[in-house]
Amino acid sequence: MEIFNINDFKIVNLDKDNILFFHPATLQIYPLKKNNIIAEVLQTTHKCGWNVAITKFGEDVCQQVISYINRTIANAPSTIYSDIKTDVYQPYFDVVVLPIAGMCNLNCPYCFAQTDGGFNFPNFTEKDIDKVVSFVMDTQINANRKSTSFVFFGGEPLLKFDIIKYTVSYIKQKYPNRSVGFSITTNGTIINDEIIDYFKQNNFLILLSLDGPDNEFNLRKYQDGRKSIDIVMQNIEKLRKEEVSIELRATLINTNPYIVETFDFFEKLQCPFTVVFAYQSENKMHQELSMYNESVLQSIREQLDDLLAYYRERACRGESIYSKIINDAKKSFDRRIGHYIPCTSGRQYFTITADGNIFSCAHLMNNPLFRMGSINNGITSPESYLPPKVTDIVECNKCWARMMCSGGCVTQKISTGMKNTTPMTYNGCELERIKWEFYLKMYYYIEKKM
Image (cartoon, rainbow, N blue to C red; front, top):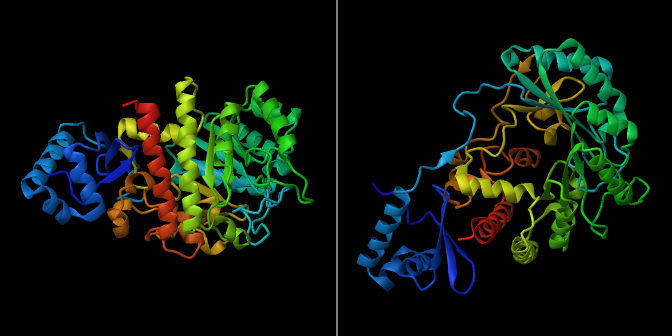
């Protein structure tokens, strides 16, 4: 039985002598010399089509190449797909985001939590916490769950530190035998010794937003325009000194020319970190910061080539890699783990606002039209907000990056007027392909060391 589809593979150029053959259906990677007949047939097919390859090399040679690839793939272990069940909708509250503060002391232009300069969700009160937490912990769909995690979110949630303390105390008193985890997404500007001690006592995981080094593209500024990076760096050191669990997250706007410098900045901090590109949301004020035309995409391609050289040098020196996305990509290629869906939003991961509205993701919480239900009525309309299987998106089946991209962020689609069942825009898809080609090269050069 044939496994290999001649129209379904990716060729990645490594250098003047070598290429990578990537098989999307099984996530297998094979390095090939360019002067190898298999490589020559595949490269010609990749550039010009199968019929041109047959004309150039002959049908017998081309069929031998396909037979060889099929035998090689068939003899390898089966691909592992790591997903929750998507055939039946059985939601439960594994992670619940509580946007407790509809306000912030910073004015980050790319903030998706705002809608055109404002927060359209209310602050939590103690009564709101009582209602929402009780719903999550007591609802029938969570009856058999051994653990639940709550994420304090905003705006800047530490502006409502009193609500954080109340929530933790309420849960511990009312549900002493339940396993409950706590985390927070913060800008890191108002952390102090009291807060650090509280985090430590209650085993908080801290996700701290930080753009990167101090340059003109570090946009995390106070309302009056002052920079925030100095105080944030001081607080990061305090958190690390007290051994509080911390992860860092950076958002790069589309024209940022400092990708290598940003990764280097975070690697030197030696904390787990994630770097993402600014993305479209309901906040139209930042739309121009998250648009990717061909000129922008070409700049990103070139910068990622430089970043690859940077990581190769780190590998030669035997230095660790702290980038979570790079390490996660390595695991995916090592174990050949693909994903039918990009995330568990609307299935295991939810956001609940103070007025009791339930959303699949915090990206949608500014607009009540996007709610899936409420704590009064439960989840009533999930269909439009769930990420579909990537195999159910017709256009995605033609893409070599489908099992890594998984069809793209569904809430980005919804918040910009698209349906959850459609692919991303062409440029959005191209950005994903650029990133995953970089991860393939990273895997070859550094992690796999083929």
